[in-house]
Structures are given as structure tokens and as C-alpha cells.
Image 1 (tube, rainbow, N blue to C red):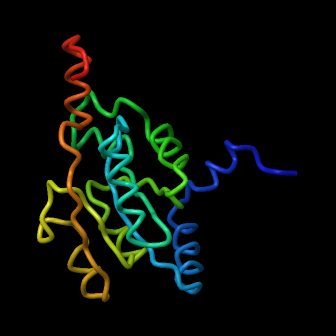
Image 2 (tube, rainbow, N blue to C red):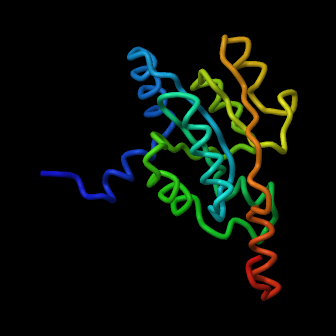
Length: 169
């Protein structure tokens, strides 16, 4: 029996043990692992462009998302807008994302150390020295990439426009 579309998406949601096994399998098969992370609270064109560009840097793409508790600590008590399961399922539905893991810490350092990707990717608001996990990935022979933002897109600005009743610009 063929899995349903929902089952196909859900199978991309992995816990720590499962992601480690999956990464070992991919690495043994010669796959180039790309890793990125974020809250991805309200997915917008900037996120989609960024994630697609990140995926193009390798053959398997892992996205780590902050847990609801982590988002609250980082962004405030009114966030996240979408819960971690909804955010994970939305990102897992993208064909170019191969695995999603949720982390509860404020940074994904432990997850990065467990996965040790070939390419660590962050958005243009970071410099390589600011990127959590960059020294570890580089020391392991990997690369760190900073991708440009798509101007005019941010979850915070979308939320503020909704709160203020303004139309999208």
C-alpha cells in the first residue's frame, strides 16, 4: 500500500537518534549534507528562496527548527504564531528538504555536532564568526555559507503588518 501524502511528509520529521542514523546512511552513500536552522514561524518567499538556495549546495538538506519553548525564549511570549509541529510539517512538505529536526536549546550547536554537516548555511544577517557551529564544521573539513536575504521579507514585519491592519506592500 502506498503511503499517503501526509505520511510521506511526516517521515521527514526525525528525532535525534533517527537523524543520526539517517545522516550516517547518507554519508556512507556519498551524499553531501547541508544543514540550516531557524524558527520559520511564518514561512514566506524569503524563507523559500533561502531554503532552496541552501538545498542547492548539497544533495541532502536538513532543517533544524527551534521548539516552541525555544522560540518563546528568543522572540518573546507572543511567538511562535505556528506551533513546532505545524512549522515542521510545512517545511517537510518542500521537496528539496530531506529531514526536519526540532531542537529545544537556544542554539542548534548540539544538533550540528551530532550531524556534522558538509555545509552549514545561515542567512545574510550573520557573518561566519557569528554562526553557531561554524568552527566545528570548518574544523571537520566542512564549509560555512552565508546566503543573501530576499529584501522586504521577514516574519516579524508580516506579524507587525497584521497587527497594525496594514496591507501587504
